[in-house]
Each structure stands twice: as C-alpha cells, then as structure tokens.
Image (tube, rainbow, N blue to C red):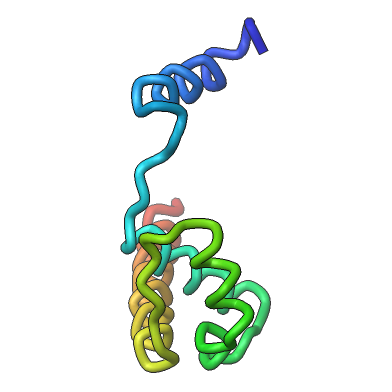
Length: 93
C-alpha cells in the first residue's frame, strides 16, 4: 500500500477529514438507483423497513426516499447512460 498512489491519495483525504468521508445525499440516491437497476430490485425496496434501518445505522444523516423518488432517480440514470452510449456509438469509425 505504500507504493500505491491511489491509496495514498485516498488515505490522505480521509486523514484531512478526520478519517471520515463526508455524506452526500445525492451520491447516496445515485448508488441506490444503480443497485435497483443492476440487481433488478423493485422500486419499493427503498421503503423496506430493515433496509432503511441499515442505512440509518451506517450514517445517521441519511434521508430515506420513497419508491417514486427511486423511480425518478433510475429514469435519470437510464437517460444519462443512454446518452453516453449514443455518443460512444457515434464516435466509432
């Protein structure tokens, strides 16, 4: 790990912040959308009681979202991925 520049940079940032990463609700919502899409979870998965308890335990700043918000986030992520794919395909020779 002493030779890995990526680890050293991450470790340095963590030390500067007191060893903890700053929580960002947007990143949390994006990660939930990715999980729903990748694993085929239903949108209501974000409303499951134990799921919410786990997330609140991991970080007490988490603001739970509902299934409609999860759906909107997934649709936004899908649109971004579609746009990226389209531009990649157009760039092909």
